[in-house]
Length: 228
Length: 405
Image 1 (tube, one colour):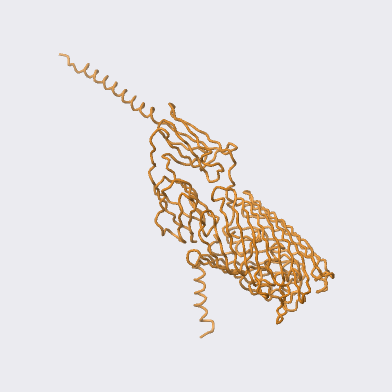
Image 2: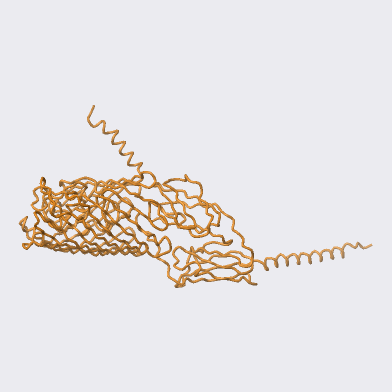
């Protein structure tokens, strides 16, 4: 008696192969149907890539998803904020250590967060909580030339453009509102807001060119003691 | 016990207080000078430059110690002491000493209030610690005059609208000051006229020597008439690139006021100053400034006045650790006295090269030529009224301090 195993084995192998194919198709099809890469490039008015631009993306179709708050650090090194710009989700906290040997006195009079950290060195204060979206401009009441920025955002997707002026993120398909901001930008955020639909392709690109020249960069070669 | 022994712990205490202060700076500035100039006011003469021919050689440009200490959260006290090696009668003292109130900026505005003794906000070149210039060793004629006999001994308030921190292109500031103890200001203008120096008269100091026939060893920082002087000014800044400053200053002295014990007279001095400084990202700096005013006395009701004006243009280029600066100064003192007492006019060229290998060291070579026509150089000193003086200086400066890094 010939064992019936072979056709049975072949059959089950075929079934398994078919099942695998379906599974693979499903695996490939699910993300293909729902995810895509969003690439935003920002250029200056004369077409050069602009690094360091804050980009936010908000889904217009899906219900608003809040980003997860983080705990960030903005140091003070050599009489400058380090980094000089941070993007943080709404509800995040930021610690402001002072690594200099001189005291600093940090303040913000921005509507999004008014606060003061009286004269200090080291890290004597607890983190500051940022619970309102907007731009917070930081200064030192002793060293007037110091300036730093926090962008508090409620957008689920955010980041900054790289040296090539580009920022990318994975998003689900749908319509998005893209906003950009840079401390030296003369346009308001609303001026440069764009709507972008991420359709059936695996990536969607948007190049935003500023309409106005940037304000001049702070002079870097100035000595610290130039204070009159 | 040796008499110096108690000084050791005292010196140690003072030194540790300095090092623990919020801010401190010690500067030593040595000079190698070659000059063909006449003796200046520090030697009892009249000159367009600081060092005379017989002062050529090694000199102490300036030794300076400054302290800044916070008093609580919003108050700061600043003391700036200097010594000079010109062998004159005012070799050391405080050039500035003030208390500053600096509340936190609020709603886009920043207030600063100073009380004590300090410079009124006129200079656009003297912007580094100790009211020194980063561009040249010798100050412009305008700033040299302020250094010799102008200081605010009183109160100044400055209110700034911080536009650039709110997304605008400009910051705007208004300043107002009220002061006393500057009734001597103007004497130097009418006696010696303008010169180019970096000597700053310390508070309470005297100018000139007792045998000086025109200056007579006077005290610029004296109150003779009990009337406060006032000034008001505006400052406009376009980012940190362009600054425009305007100031109206009037010491409101009573020109008839005389101190009969010392013979000191109150000089009624007022001026308007307007200046602009522009800087570029590639290291260029340009400054233009003008100052126009009048000083007057009326001893016994006999009114005499000296209108004066000075202006300069400076251009500087920084290339890494190197800086080249060139400045042209023009100045003029007129007089209501028919004989011409106090008349002066002249101009000057300054060229300087500076090299700063690090934050501590700075080497500067400066060439300065002043051409001036001075009534008193001939009338009081028997020298030719017209003179061309040239001064060449090599300065080696070493700085140490909490902010020098």
